[in-house]
Image (tube, rainbow, N blue to C red):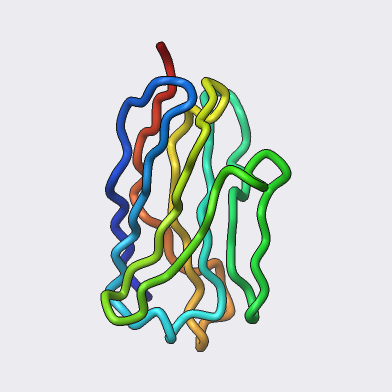
Length: 117
């Protein structure tokens, strides 16, 4: 099972930007699914953006503001977030499922993003 570690979270004012990074212990090419999820207090964890079988998916709230990308050489994937809103405040998790896995895959430990003035 892969190890995933997030970084890049923190506090930002509304309208600002942050880039979250996820460092993987395996080559990005080892994964069939990669993505970012978030969980706000009192809410269910939800998909933000992800790659599966060559296609990219964004949640409606992320479309046009967030971009998921990878750096295969560095074994990293990213979530660039722009025009952040207070409702984007949540703990963000990266997630990946290796090619040989049939279960739930691996999760990072989560990183806090706070959007407030």
